[in-house]
Length: 255
Image (tube, rainbow, N blue to C red; front, side, top):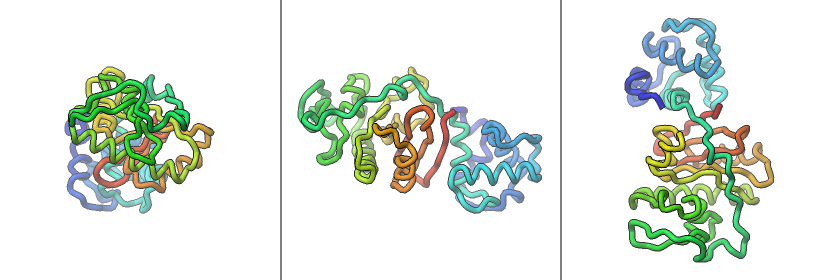
C-alpha cells in the first residue's frame, strides 16, 4: 500500500478526526485526494481540482453504494476508511488461488500431521482444531504447519483464535464445507509473496475463504451479515476475504 501518511494525509487525518461533513463542503485538498482515489477506482473521469461538481458527486455516491454505505452526500470516518482501502491496492497473489481442501471428518480434530511449537510452549498439530467444535485447523491457518508461519507472539495467537471464532459463525450459517485459501502470514512471508503492506493476514486476523459448493453469492451474503469488520470481494478470483480488524466495517474489491 502507498504510505497514506504521505500520499493521502488529509484523508487519513479526516478518518482519525471521527467527524462527518457533507462531501461538497469538505476541504478542497481533501476532495482532491478523494477524486484521485475515485479515479483509480474508475468511477471518476473528471479533473482532480478539489471542486465538487456533478461528476465528483456522482462518483462519490456510486462508490458509497458499491460498499454498502448510506448517505450518498456525506463523508465520515467509515467512508474515509473505505476510500483508503482503494490505496491499499489489494492484489490477488499466487497462494490465494491455491485452495486447501477441507479435511475428511475422520481426520479433523486429531493430533496428527506436522506440528508447531507455539511461543506459549504449546505443541499444536496440522489436523488439530484451533477451537473445539469449529472446523478450522492449525494446518489450514499456517499452511500445513509451515515453520515460517509459526505465530510470532501470543497476541497473534489470540488474533488467530478471534478469527477462528468469527469463521465458526460464518461456517454455522453456511452449513456447508468452506476451503481456506490463505490465513496467517508473517511480515516476511507477506512481503515475499506480494501481500498488501498493512494486510490483516500479518496480524492473524484474516481468512480468505471459498465455498466448496461454489455458491459465492450466498457466502458473501452471510459474510456481509457476520461480525467481520473487513470484507474483500474477490469472488472472481476464487475467494472472499474476511478479517476482524479493530474499528468499523470496510468493504473493498480485488482487481
